[in-house]
Length: 414
Image (cartoon, rainbow, N blue to C red; front, side, top):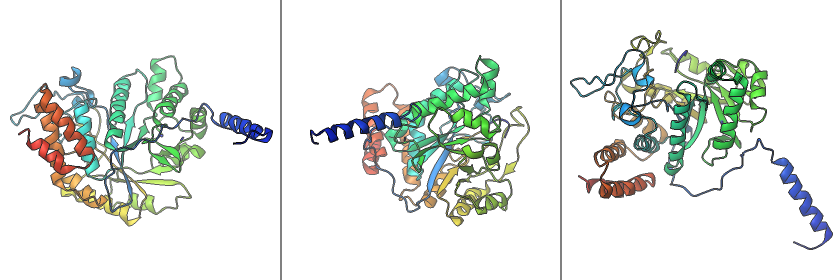
């Protein structure tokens, strides 16, 4: 990120009753209310001993040259060149850390399936996807395409989702198009209302879709947000901590982010204050070690040490101490800021192993490694229809939590 979400008798009396009922239903279903999808039985959910809902903040903003024909700015920043490969076979990327599978494209189905399976076996309930809206400005459209690619796969794995709206993008849309910023934001909200909120796996709080905004950084009055939401289904709307005054009555609470104090005093204050019936969405993170200065895109925001996984453990413990209902993990894959739970060359599966213990799943590193092996074989056997058919069966076993069957099929491809 730059500059630091459901929905009979034939008497006259019966006829009148039926008619009035139909009219009531018709008039109550305004165009702003999304029609929920039919319930469909999906893959089984992972059983957890911890009832806390755990959501993963997810970045869909990566483009890779093998997939897209170019390296996106989140791999390059201003001065890195992933075409340069070092003696260890690692590409030069804008991060202090290197993804275990190497730099990837967020639209790649194989990558998405790998990510979602890892999260499932770590006890993650859903994703909160960083969302730049729908407009064809800068890389917003390609990010929207990647988000849709992720959303398409989520239901097949059995995970929920919501979005974190980057409201400042509307200002850029205004500068580059004939839309006002408010109109741009209204179009984004209509897209969510029509395409995401009706989905049965969209995160809902008390029957309302959950929507976060990272700020707000541009729309800083309640009247603006009232205007933005006026033609759509009202979400449970959460701004970043200490930003509730900017959303007024449209806001339904706040969410926390990274506490740069080793004592976690900011998190303690946030969790300890009276919520007044508002929702508090907590946060846990492994570190903060950005690449902005090194990447030539600005100054560093600060530093939080990984401490061999203890930072993640401490922030998870803090959430447990206050018995939070909802927690956001910061983040799956913000390589530019170093807040990464995705497996890396440096940390391997450590963050997800810590998370498995916290969520209380019955799975261990062995299942995470199995998912990794599945991904590697998807790459190895591209263009091999018989092997890919076996891997398709393997994927179904993995989403259905049939680990032994999945392992047997993978072993058959050795």
